[in-house]
Length: 398
Length: 210
Image 1 (tube, chains in turn yellow, blue):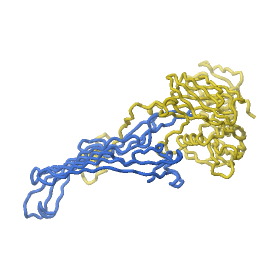
Image 2 (cartoon, each protein chain N blue to C red):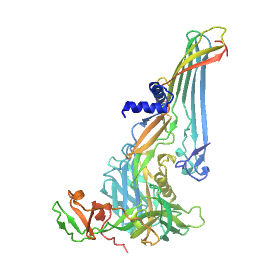
Image 3 (cartoon, each protein chain N blue to C red):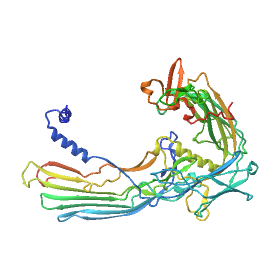
């Protein structure tokens, strides 16, 4: 069926009754062109793109290494992290003790501060001088004392996976807050998760080249078991301002689904708790709203970021970022494999070795033998570090 | 009047009162119009100069919009110009044209990107600090009346219209999409091309019948 025949057949079916295809084609084309709505690229006339400085800093009692990150804004077409290097960065307390930071990496300034110098109730401020001579300071922030993490626990709860629409069980973690009224009413938690996982199996031997001579590794289980640690990006906040007491139960933290293998062997959650002042809480709440809202760019009214940093020589300059202080307390929990949870295995694309498919490599080729059958696959199947973990067991692992 | 507060959640299940703030709106302006009713050339031209500013202020930051500084309302349209002109060449043939111009409506735009806690954020302009492109449109039509016989059952006329003669892509909305990590702006135009229509009309009676 050639194109001309198909066209006549299609148009005749669309417009039955012996109408000439050519006339209707013109009519359809004219109408389509006439009412055609149009989407074109739009470039806002915003003049010179603003190059604002963003300074994020904190002084955390309970943390040995303090960090301050300095960067600049970038264009929408290329939203990358643009560090500001070569700044003079320091933190001063109300007694004029100065702690000078070193630039350890592009835009990242760090310092190990003795914990005895970080006093609860004392005020601290940050001072930054850029290579261009701009002088920025933060307001004085009081180092809020925190309280021990009361308890961290979990419940088995179902959840609908947003990607594939599958409902499965998982663990919802919670934290309880128990604090006296003399402590701040605003709290934040940061979560670091560590989980143990394995590769598909041991590497019984390698094929290093086309000779297909087996080469046995020193430890066939050497790349089998790994531990992966991730700091979660989610922002967990709560306020007890409207409550009679400074207590709150069952504050939701992260959710771990059984649709991945993090709960397969052993899982650990390290919860860091921080006490904030009201403005720091509002700053992190803004960030939470901006990054964790659903629906993309159009479900929330844009907002102007809060800051407590200003240009000493030009108070009208807009500065981004925040300097905050707190005491940090922590608690870690472990979760072993739960029999009532059906945790999905990680999919490893294994293949039965045959010369037709694997005769040309690639090399080195890892081989696992099972009941006399040679099994191979891509490197991720047998090298657990390919998934981002390490074979070194963490010191804290129980 | 009420306005959405900074960070308001449009899809929030919470009561709307938790997402809006109350304030005041001041509007002022002047309208001018000249009309010509006689001779071959008739029509009118009007121009409106107006401002509509909103002020949402309060004791605390969360009670303010735009830092408590007045900003253009969503309906602020400083300049609005309209011209309607009809030219009668003969009793049977006439032209008419329509010119519309107005300032684009205010909009809050993302202007840059920055990083905080290792994550990218969008930096937005002040509330309604920018405007979508101005609206401008020219329409033209030619009217050809039927014969001028006094006694006739029905009188007909042809009308050839061109809507949006210049084919200007007037922005209906401006939006942004995240594509491959970049934030790209787009404008949607509903009628982005001249629309030509030819119509035949009739009425009972003759040329002069209403």
